Image (tube, rainbow over all chains, first blue to last red; front, side, top):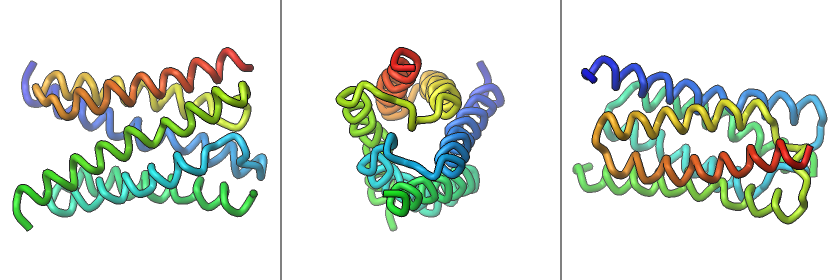
Length: 86
Length: 86
C-alpha cells in the first residue's frame, strides 16, 4: 500500500463520517421531533468536533479543518433541533 | 502552541467523538425504540468509521485504530438496535 492509497482511504473516511449526519438532520427537520436522539450525545459530539477543528487549525491541516467545520455545522443543527423540539 | 498541545487537543477530540455515542447507545437500549435515529446516518457512519479504522491500520497509528475501533463497536450497536427495533 502506498501513500496515495492511505490518503484516498483517509479522505473517503472523512467524507463519509461528515455526510453521515445529513440524513439525521433531514429526518429530524422533517419530523419536527427529536425525542429519539440523545441530547448528551450531541453535546459531547459537538464539543469533540469543535476540538477536532481546533486540532486542524493547530496542525494547519485543511482537510481536517474543512471536514470538521461541516460536521460541526451539522451536529450543531441536530443539537439545536433537539433543544427547540423538546 | 507546541506539538504537545496539539497532541493533547487531538487526543481529547478523539476521546470525545468516541464517547459521544455511549449516551445514544444507552438511551436507545433503555427505550427499546430507535425510530428517531436515522438508519441512513448509521449505515454511512459505520462504513465511514470502518474506513477510518482501515486508515489507522495503513498509517500504523494506534490512537486512530483504538478510537475508531471503539466508535465502530458503538455505531454498529446503534445500527443493530435500529434494525432490530424496527
